[in-house]
Image 1 (cartoon, rainbow, N blue to C red):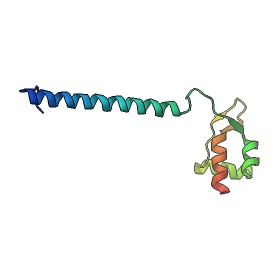
Image 2 (image 1 turned 180 degrees about the vertical axis):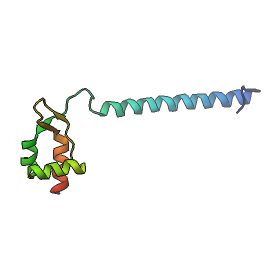
Image 3 (image 1 turned 90 degrees about the vertical axis):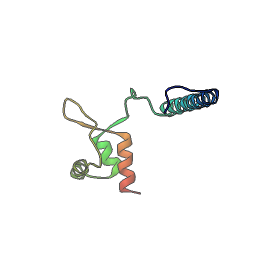
Image 4 (image 1 turned 30 degrees about the horizontal axis):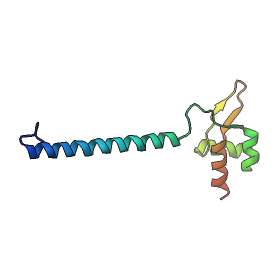
Length: 101
């Protein structure tokens, strides 16, 4: 690519290219903002449910729930000081749909 335009035609072509790049950049910025605005905020705490809720909702035993955790089908999101497990509600519902389509 040349460093600078050598004649009027080249300068006009360069100006058109720069204008096109500027318009594309602006369009990309608008799309990026729209995508970011459509995502949920990161600082919102997810809805959490305890082990009993998960077992009742999904219809499994303690041992089966532990097996699903080991297989990676559902992850413990948080544990309290007493060791009680909490799962994200979205993960619980996803597991239920997976097991009972």
